[in-house]
Image (cartoon, rainbow over all chains, first blue to last red; front, side, top):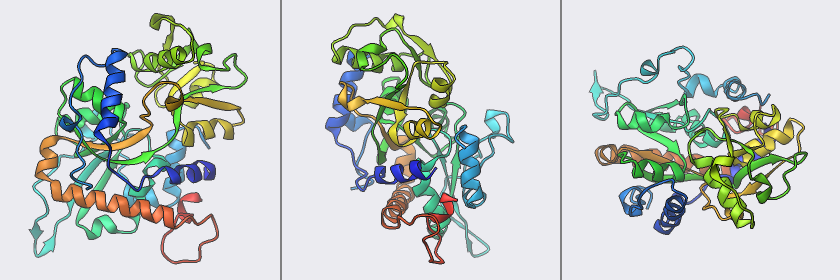
Length: 52
Length: 297
C-alpha cells in the first residue's frame, strides 16, 4: 500500500486547468477510431473558468 | 491486501477516514435507486440560527483508492465542514454510473477520465468538465512471462477493460499495434469484462492484457502480488494521454452552484498542497495534526 500511495502523490496536479488543444487531439483520435461520430468544440464541454 | 475494493475500503476505514468521510452505502442498499440521497441543492440556509450544511454528492469513477486522498484529507481536516459543505463520496456500481446519476440530477459532481467526457458529449449527454486533479502514466498492462514483448504482439489477444465488449479497449490496443508497425482486425480481439479488477483478470488468466491501467495503481499492485508486470504507455504508442482524472457536472449545476463548486475546487487544491508538503512516512510524524500517517496504517 505504501508503494502505491507514494507513487500516487506526485500524480496530483498543481494545475487544474486543461488546454483546449488537448481535447482537440483526443477527440480527433476518437473520431479516427470510430469511438465518436463527430467532433465538438472543446469549449462546449470543458471550462477553465472555475480554476482560473 | 490487494484483492480489490474491499481491501482499500478497509485500509482507509481502519485509518478512521471512512467513518467520518464516506458514505459506504452501496452494500447496504442493493437497489441502485436507493444508493443516492435526494439533494436539496438550494444552497445553505439557516435553521434555528444554525447554518445548515450544503450537501455535495461526488461520484467516484472507481472504488475508493489513493487517487481520492486529497478529498479525504480536506474532509478529515474539517475544511469542507468549515466551508459549510457536507461532502458525500459515492462509489459507482459500474465505471460510468456517475454520468447517468448526474444527468438525472441525483448526483452533483463526478470524477471521470477525459476520454469518457468526450464520449458522453458525443452521445449528447449534458456534462461539462471543470477541474483536473490527477495525471499519471498508464496504458495497457501485460505480464512479462507472457508472449508479449512489444505492442504489436497484442494482436488477437484477450483484452480486459471495464466497458467490454464496447469499442474503447480494442481501439486503444489497435492504435498501439499499428503505431508499432503491426496489423490487426478489431474483431480478432476477445473482449473480457472483469469489472474494475484489471490485475485479477491477468493473474487469473482471464485476459492477456488490461486497459486502461494506471502505473501508480495496477502495475504496482501486480508487482506487489509477486508478478512481473509492465505496461505500454498511451503516450508512447500513438494514443492521446488520457490517464488523468477530472471533475464533471451538469452545465446547469455548474451555473447554479458555481460558488459552492469553486469552494470545492479550492479545498481540493488545498488537499493536494497538503499531500505534497507533508510527505511523512509511517511513524515519523509527531504532530497532533492528522497527517498521512493515518492512511499508511
